[in-house]
Image (cartoon, rainbow, N blue to C red; front, side, top):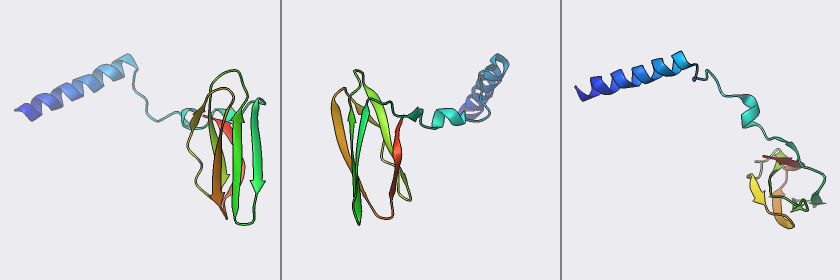
Length: 104
């Protein structure tokens, strides 16, 4: 009996959401993608080695940013929060290739 009641309430909730137009058939692709290129106040210092590459990313903007290092042929680095005048070092091995820094 408990299962029937839960199923009824779940179906009623879905019906109410549909009636209100609150459901989404699919995720918005733009919300899953990074916001765009990092602003000009972000400094990117790339060192391209033979086997390992690394990049130092520094936020010189007067505000906090969330930034992500994008790589080709390797896993992108996670989206990190940068306070003003702070930086981070990221490194990766061949065959990874630096593709840029984007906001996220």
